[in-house]
Length: 175
Image 1 (cartoon, rainbow, N blue to C red):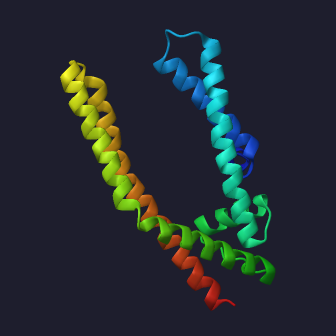
Image 2 (image 1 turned 90 degrees about the vertical axis):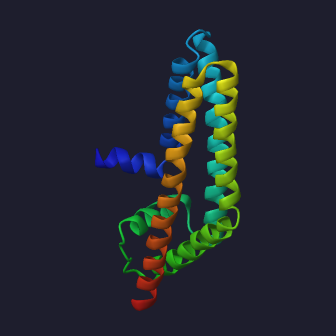
Image 3 (image 1 turned 45 degrees about the horizontal axis):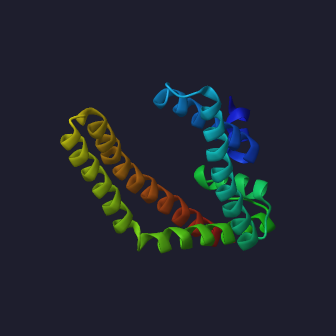
């Protein structure tokens, strides 16, 4: 199980396969009256969009840190587990990675209240539309998911900031 988890974390192919399976599964779940070929076509489209965005993000991070995508995935795993590398070159790459990631988190902080407010407006709008059309169940489910997603976003952001600040301090201490 440990190697499968690492494969999904490190491999763009593994992540693409997971997105494809989820896309086809969600299409089958919510659009069960449509043809299965359409589920697969939509899943492939979703996978292409997500993989394109992920490849661009990985390329930018690789260019900013000077390391390959697989090395970045390994260093990200070390950050999550609070493991400080011993190799001076690896520490230098990790410093650049931590600085890059902290910069992205801090730049995103300016827009975070607007995104969260937009998500709240979408949830409220769905509730109003659901009440007006008489099918309140789906609207309540989506509103509950959004209400649960917002604190999760804030908690994960706080956790990422803590991990990256810890790693920045640990890298300064050791060298």
